[in-house]
Amino acid sequence: MSTAASFLTEEMRRQAIGQESEPRSLEVEKGAIIKFAEAIGDGNPLYVDEVAARASRFGGLIAPPTFLRSAVSARPDLPFDVPFERVLDGGSDWEYFEPVRPGDTITAVSRIDDINERTGSIGLMLIQTIVITYTNQFGQVVATQTNTSIRY
Amino acid sequence: MTAQIVWDDIDEGTEIGPVVRHPDSQQLVKYAGASGDYYQIHYDKDFAQGTGLEDIIIHGALKNAFLGSLVTDWMGPQGNLRRLSCQYRGMDIPGRPISARGLVTGKYEDDGDYLVDCEIWLENEQGQRTTPGRATVSLPKS
Image (cartoon, rainbow over all chains, first blue to last red):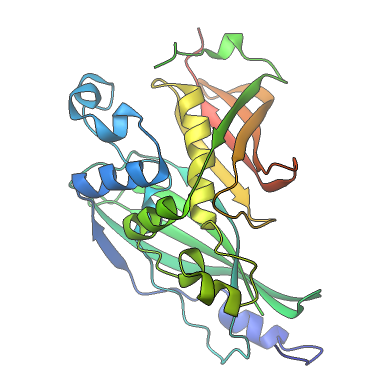
């Protein structure tokens, strides 16, 4: 844990905001969707029952809303070293635009949207907001996910 | 599957859930495998305690998934989930029941879509909201 009173300068913030990760792609497999639905304890037929899903307005299986979490995106590099080793997940904010289906290739790119520091009960913390954009093979943005992480 | 709910029948204050979940260490291992999140604080008690935690803790993203299921089960097959957010305020430990619940906070029409905003959360046995969040869904009008 750092004991410094401050770490982040305005100049560093400007350098960090807008930094993007390299894109990473995931091929969505039917088995992976079913396994994910089972793991979260969700028996919704749209995720696990091919026959019922085929008869639905989607015409086939779709992935549960947080499935894209398994399309692990690369972390954008900060243009400076950070003296914090621990990371806490602060929360997540998803927006959905298109369903995700078996056979889709989803490409995830993450971008630093904001970075700030704060001093709390655990000392000096770096609070990063990262926006991950998930795009399918048709160039449609299927979802965005805004994540807050706390490094301390 | 329950009958499809419709926008006309929803009011501010309509309750969602509760759905009580009983996550155990086996579910956390399954989730680690299915999601690719192998951080040991979720299945290795010695490791977790070595980082200062009291026990292994439930993945934040699994709690996010519980809230997702709460909302998608409620909105039914004709509903569309537009937005789902949550904050990880408190840690939850497997072996203890957690309840997923929600409350409708508003309904409105936007460009031909019939939308409903909800406040959603997970609460522990003490009634503490460890994971508060929000959701927006579109529903069939009637």
